Image 1 (cartoon, rainbow, N blue to C red):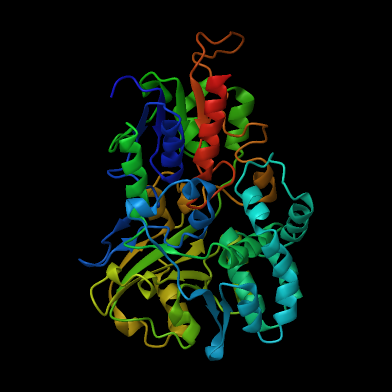
Image 2 (spheres, helix red, strand yellow):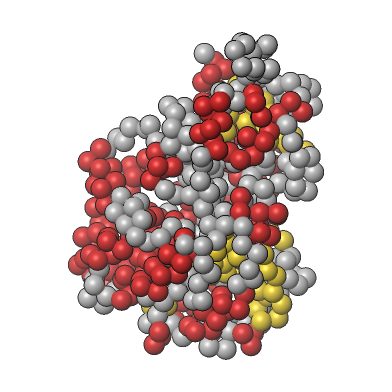
Length: 487
């Protein structure tokens, strides 16, 4: 293409969302991706056997279904179908019991023994204000809520640790269900703000659902790159950008990278205070992920577990809390909390007839090279006896492998930063505009910059609103860039 107006480094969901936002505004956009194909963690590949299509990382797209960015795209016209299971998620317990998350508050409440009234009291007010809560949750932290009372209620409850908020439920099923939702924070369940993760994932099930993309998550990326090409944008793969100075000229630069990568790419072109703030950015634990080719459906003892894509495997709230606390302390739990997905429940085309793809991961200390396959499989076998007998093949990635696969997964952290209270307010640093990078070419101590740089913006999941396949980090960063270009 001719000299671009905008350059995007990184073709993950956020980088492509930034590129599309700029291209829709009429800018000529060029995207550089270091890997051989775009997508980041949103890719699909035959990781085990021919004909078995596994999602490399993300599978369940509750946030994509709720995302204003994706709502503005006509995904269906580009062949993207979101398939939602009959049961949003299930959390098995010993004895064939399970906490079951249904599509409505009422159905979920009715299925939690002794917790119907408590669950309704917890979730019905949030469901009534769901559009405002989701808009706020997927916006920059400085955004003003349109329903401040509802937002204040969610914030007050969400600030609580998950263990405290779960006390409002009384059954083992209800508390375990909430613990599994909150464990998506990848934090000890006694930490502040973990309650917000639990409430958010429950609320998503009651509003937009927990769907998967038919044919694999990679089709979502195919749709994004196809639209970008129609708008005149280009994606160049297999081209790692080591330094910002290596980029061709452009009016604006978007970086779908972590703060650690930004420090490496920009060097002393960043002001000292900003460099120190980026260096303080904390990453969370890593994940060890196992993909299986399975000869048939997983034989869960609980029927609801057979009807959902997402199964949270970890036992009682106490067991989940102990596992997550062990990870935070730098240990590898013997009985880890595991997130298991079985997309074949709604998307039979992922594997040959009668067979399924399955993946599961557990949290581990950052940078771990420990293979947790045996412990993950033991947890699944606990609630689905005979599972191991169905395994045809497996593919394993430790946290260290995840970091090598994708440099954005620092230490295997798939969320691009720890979900602490401090980093919720200031992600990656505490500034009014958290996307714009204060960059200058040729900065030297005591001297002004030789030339003003193009507008440079961070658009990765290390910026608000954080991790997940929703594209909102990229959209908000691109909007900030467009505002500055028009100023």
